[in-house]
Length: 74
Image 1 (cartoon, one colour):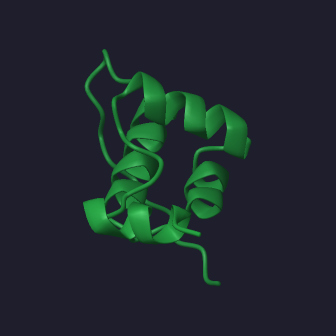
Image 2 (cartoon, rainbow, N blue to C red):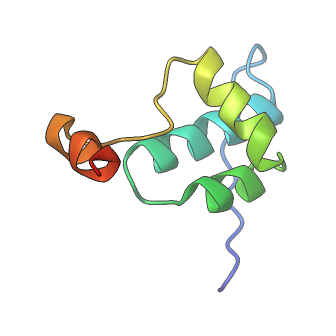
């Protein structure tokens, strides 16, 4: 995978770590990155990234209502 450096000016009240976390969250939320990829992007473990998702109100599982029922049916 090729690595790209993204340089953006940030307002003084937004740290680089926060901006990276929010980028990773949005890329995960839109399905562009997997959970593990998003966690690595912001330097978190999967568990810590899941905690951040919870704090921000972003679901870890993004399923259609019927899909979860299908997955859990015996």
